[in-house]
Length: 117
Image 1 (cartoon, one colour):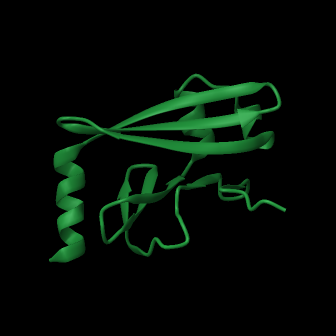
Image 2 (image 1 turned 120 degrees about the horizontal axis):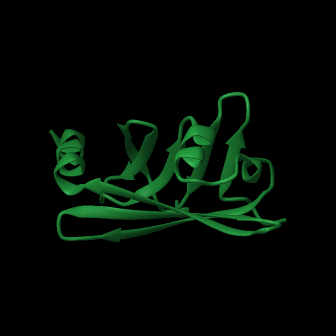
């Protein structure tokens, strides 16, 4: 049986999507509003936790029913010049729903520095 790379806690309204490989070692969790990133020593985002997931989905204009019908969830991370784009794709029996998330690099860089200093 294939291990799922996501979990949704209905009681805590928390969605976790993992990008972590067997070799990755998480050294720090960085919190930005409703988003918690688990980061490796090399700076890779190994997982993303979305707190208040139903509110985040509602703000993204998505139907909250998808939280009860998740078949798969994926992260796509794309570094940009002054920000980082994180695409969250949630697959349900009715199709794929995408949530774009942008973070400024200065905020993330400051948090990364906290890992090493």
